[in-house]
Image (tube, rainbow, N blue to C red; front, top):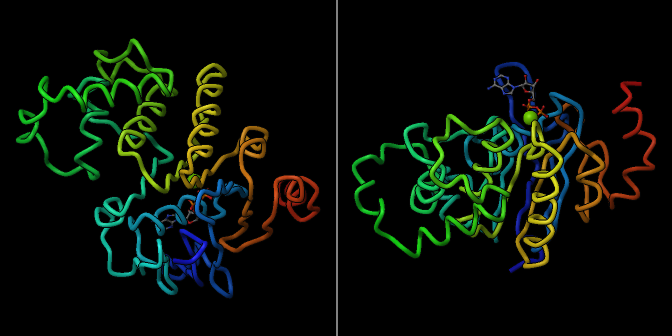
Length: 253
Ligand code: ADP
Ligand code: MG
């Protein structure tokens, strides 16, 4: 097994005539096992599309994604989730008819938004171990005490944390988070920062897209910068902070 747990190899994604990811040569980067990669870039740079390509929501037009030496080209999103990859969406999703706790419990056995109501009876109120895991995940994201809330009563930031908990409970090997601090208040952001640091210390591979660079550059050990779908820069957070191309991209110069 190679040192890189995830390899993005010459990936291109075209939407009609528009190339959202890949630039002229295709996008290539590796994520070392246990690494914490920050993925940054201006709006429209292709960050969320890259997550969609890695998690199998979209298929590359060219190139391939390799997870633990397995080519994911023929894998569905649910297969990739089954290999231990989890991701949150930039716009959080939840099951509105379930409580906060139930939303997390359902995350363990259901990686897609497929029909599941018939199976609810199998675990609802019944699986104590699953319930405990879900409660622990909610506590880790700062949602302790909200277990029985209706999802509709959560704030936007709490909903985002619920989605993190729903993936966390699956104990992913590789965890992708798309703008996890967006709309999240400072207290929950602090919870999230310590959660990510704990996951990193425990060996989980993390890839995090963020607009909050102060938050991300404090946590990540490597950073990939995208612009117009192509790799603009790659390096340690300190190198990225000083990189004139990165500064220019962010200032729109
Ligand atoms: P980011 O997450 O970096 O802000 P995205 O990956 O969401 O950027 O989008 C990259 C570019 O691809 C944008 O110009 C966006 O409008 C375009 N794009 C994303 N998804 C689609 C799609 N399904 N169809 C057409 N264009 C898309
Ligand atoms: Mg995005």
